[in-house]
Amino acid sequence: MEVNLLSYTKNPQKIIYASARQCYSKFSAYSIYSKKDKLPSSKLKKFIAELVKRGHLSPLEHVSFTFAASGISRICTHQLVRHRIASYSQQSQRYVGMDDFDFVLPDSIKKDPRAKKEFLEAVSYLKNKYQKIRGILEESSGLDKEKINQDLRFLLPQACGTKIVISMNARQLLHFFAERLCLRAQWEVRGLAAKMLSFSRKVLPEIFDGAGPKCKKLNFCPESALDCPLYPNKK
Ligand SMILES: Cc1cc2nc3c(=O)[nH]c(=O)nc-3n(C[C@H](O)[C@H](O)[C@H](O)COP(=O)(O)OP(=O)(O)OC[C@H]3O[C@@H](n4cnc5c(N)ncnc54)[C@H](O)[C@@H]3O)c2cc1C
Image (cartoon, rainbow, N blue to C red; front, side):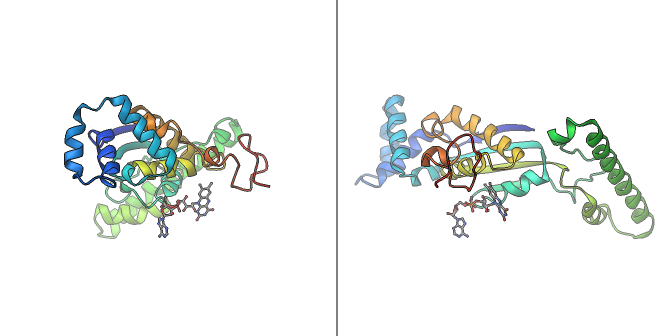
């Protein structure tokens, strides 16, 4: 899996500060934003950390992060895109042919030579059939490449690799991390969340140092997990 931070809102601390102060000030956010050029960064950080502690989170929505992820499976992105307060652009299996598709091999299967052999054989079988059916359709259907790809993708496994661009605002990132860093979340989406958190922390530690699975804030596990090593469940 490869994850990179492509971009984030310029002057994020000043934007959050001006938005938060706007709620209580007779001056405009623009004048607050402009004046605060000289406010020491340590004060801004403290102010923002306090906002997060108090749960005054709407100012965080004005700052967003854009990530690029690749080498993840469609299983992972299917879970990712359930998070609705975000924007996504994903590699198409219609415009991009998948004749020699990448795939994600889970560790449990990788570690077991017999299971790995069966898995690789199944992938190779599917690739072979994908290419064969392409040949047949090209010869007889009269359909163009896109239309053929569009139907051929019905054959692709969920392990199929994909590439996606993700934009989320800082508030939604906190929520995404709370859900997907939970040890009950699936390992691949958890790995993606961990990498996104590590980038986010470098940009805004005052917000993201405290981010993590929801139990971290609650001090108990809200899931019905009896075996979680982090926190006991509510009962
Ligand atoms: C460990 C784990 C297991 C899961 N298992 C399953 C499963 O078996 N089956 C399954 O279908 N899903 C499953 N999910 C997905 C889960 O149900 C959510 O769809 C997913 O986590 C997205 O989060 P969210 O609902 O908080 O929404 P987001 O889209 O991230 O939105 C953030 C918040 O905005 C608010 N919001 C957004 N849209 C609406 C809306 N339309 N109406 C009201 N409020 C809204 C909510 O407060 C929401 O929490 C699982 C998730 C996890 C973490």
